[in-house]
Length: 68
Image 1 (spheres, helix red, strand yellow):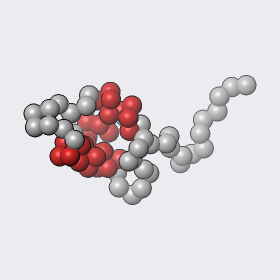
Image 2 (tube, one colour; image 1 turned 90 degrees about the vertical axis):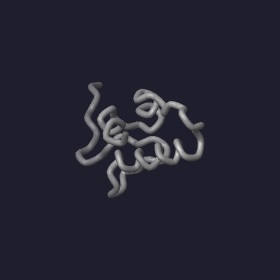
Image 3 (cartoon, rainbow, N blue to C red; image 1 turned 90 degrees about the horizontal axis):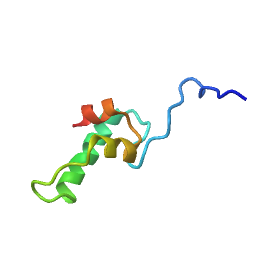
Image 4 (cartoon, rainbow, N blue to C red; image 1 turned 180 degrees about the vertical axis):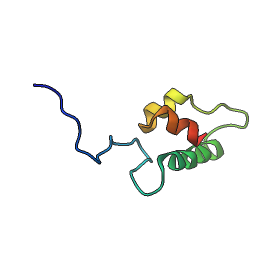
C-alpha cells in the first residue's frame, strides 16, 4: 500500500519544548538555547551542534539557523 501524505495543515510533531503555537518555532528554540546557555553551559562552552538541536527538538536546519 503506498504511503500517503499527512492531511493539509498538519505538521510533524515538534520535540520537547517546541509546540505549534502562534510563536514561531525559531523563536521558541531561541529561548530554549538562551536558557540552556544561561543555566546549563559553563562560560565558554559550545552550544550543541545544528544536528543535535535538529534531532532533539524536531526542527529543520533553517529553524536552527534562524534561532541562532
